[in-house]
Length: 359
Image (cartoon, rainbow, N blue to C red; front, side, top):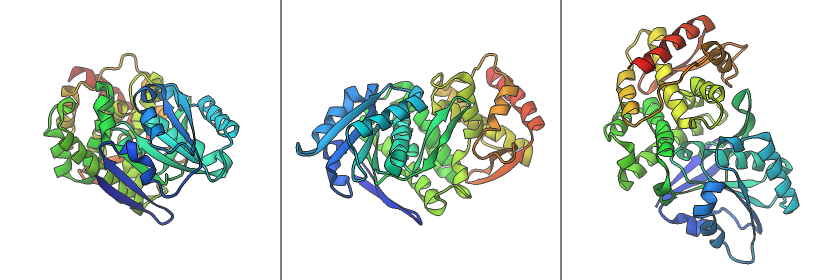
């Protein structure tokens, strides 16, 4: 097992990574809790809910709330229903919420914890590759129909318990989704990490040791950034590389049509394209495009309304005064947030989607 401590100016918590550690979950909690509510989704519940419930002694009050699997659950209705569950089960300020699942469950349950009685403890128990990114750093949120994660907060967990054994049951689409964020961590940190990920070729046949190595490295990259900039005033914005177009694409297509990571993968290609125009540089866009294509990431999007897409990009949380701010890549490991005007973006985005289909 491996453990990493996340220490910011205001918070400290541990990330534990290993096999079968869900069965020993209470031993990783910072204190005892008499009342616990496990929030999970309909897919994960069938696989791992009983394992986590049985890890707690019978004298503890352990409740469960199951939401539908998928991005549809990051909604105001699902949020309000979970708040109601907390009230009816008499959770108080000394209770604990366990977020058992992928990024959707982690964001949703974390936002419930952040707002119920002005904040109670929660732990992240991620069950997807994607959640190696979303479970660390304390960002919690739900979606608005106009944009992703527009209703949320910074609220760190008291622990992250990452049982990599839960990754063995992931479908192909979820592996693709998670590995987009792994690639992102390589691009924003160092070339060797980026190259090591791409050199493995097919992500659906990775050994457990290689997968764990990539996840550990990705978590360390994120931890280093979050420790320096917890509330996203500076370099933490770099973690949004690929997300400006990615979030807009998710909203435009309809949440759940493609996964978050698949949208971010397209968004990273677009950010590289914009970077080449703005900086006049050469990026590894062709190398990344080839790798994404090899791993069957969705690349063709019919009848995309590019004007609507650019307007959605204006709703991005980095935007200032209705001007789009994009995280751009000067070179691997060196990024910069730049304002990009609508006219230029509209021209680039039209060419970009046409080239995606042609290449």
